[in-house]
Image 1 (tube, rainbow, N blue to C red):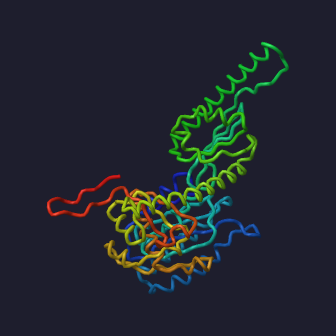
Image 2: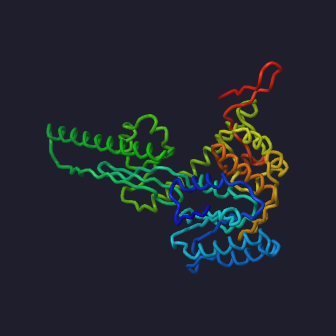
Image 3: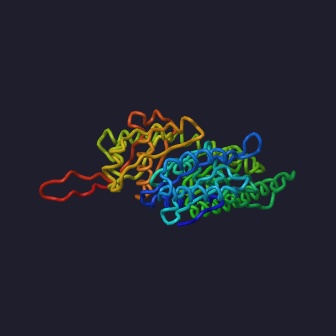
Length: 404
């Protein structure tokens, strides 16, 4: 399967994850490559030197003229050729390739930043960093408005995916008195109300069509209350923050401030969600902790949402737990990174984290990354909420699922 993309639209990270999760492990080297494509202080990318060194060293680990070496060399050549056409605005590049498996090749150039170069050579795609990118830069909607104008954005994958502007006739204040002033004030209030209704209708349609779950609104003290009064409950419940942004603000400024608001919201809700999960676990409810229990629950399709610590090195697990649940031999991954800390991650952490993310994708379980490592530290960085819990078998009946 040969396919590549020059950029990343909102859903493409999720779609890419889905395609990669379907890949069956092979007895050939599978390359997963994450590159920082941001320009350095000299205005140039610096991944070429990293790749030349790592490709040369990794190639030597395969016997000359073996199927493994031939597949690896073909991948290295194709990746090198692909990277000649990285667009200047890209902040990250991801490539997944295994020439010996039907010329499998998936690539994307991202607006979302990748902080360091990472190369994984394994028998299947390494999805942990990609899943984290997809969550960090998931889609959300932003409404910036005043009393006669509104701008609606859908951000995702590190850039604006869609935008729309509503412009109504600007009302000018005039000095009038008595009944004329009262009529003018009523006219003004009615005009602002109609503007707010139109804006909310447009935002609601955008959120519905795009499947948006989080919304940020911004505006002055006059328009924000009107907007919220007109919002249906389902839309109101999606608002995670209200900011003070000028309607004339640059797109980059709006993106930067709203992304920071998303990060702060995640930090606040991470602690709350983990606390609820642990309460359910302690009460014997619909939650499990630790990689072994979570892997078992994933294998049976029980997991509703997978919780993982954000740094892969903090994932604790045993490759034997993966081997028990897998029909394929568990092999040793090779890891290289421009960051020495990332390069030193334990092989078992790579193996277990890949299995967790891959099984979550295969069973349509959500994946949530917890930025504060202390929240899941006592559980090896892994926990999950469950869709149902299996009842223990009895002598006179088969096990029946107990749904939440």
